[in-house]
Length: 139
Ligand code: CMP
Image 1 (cartoon, helix red, strand yellow):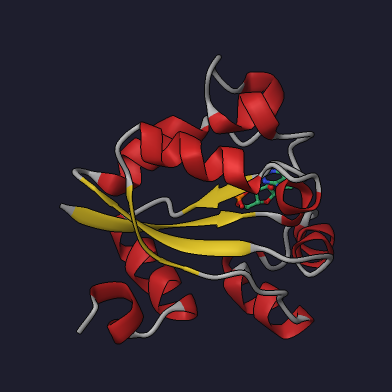
Image 2 (cartoon, rainbow, N blue to C red; image 1 turned 90 degrees about the horizontal axis):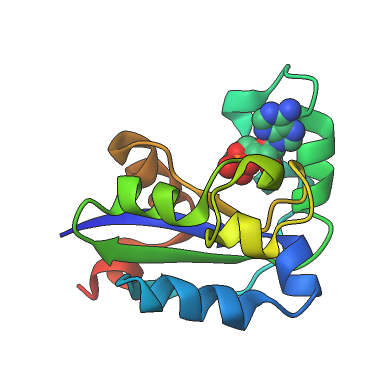
């Protein structure tokens, strides 16, 4: 078993899709190990996406991610990082496979419903960004 981080983004929380997305993730076999609803400050959103700083979409991304509540969560499964990325689909919903979370619920490349870590190393960092050791491991 391994863990990854997902964030249900402000577009999906605001349009009342969070419950459906969470059910979808559980239905495909993920176990929720930690979860909260929070609204990110500019500093938090900027720090979380610091890897994209300088890219043309960075300011819009930060602004969007602080525009309303988000739901970060730790998900556990075999090969969690790869399985979650497969489950959510391509960044742009127009390119996402049928049945993926983004195909079903995302509005656009920017407002794309959900974030998922892209490597085990980034998953560990992103999980630690939101959750204490006690929250994610129950220890
Ligand atoms: P996410 O998986 O959260 O990681 C970075 C986010 O930047 C991505 O999803 C998109 O929502 C957002 N984004 C906006 N524009 C672009 C773009 N042109 N290329 C890649 N990501 C983009």
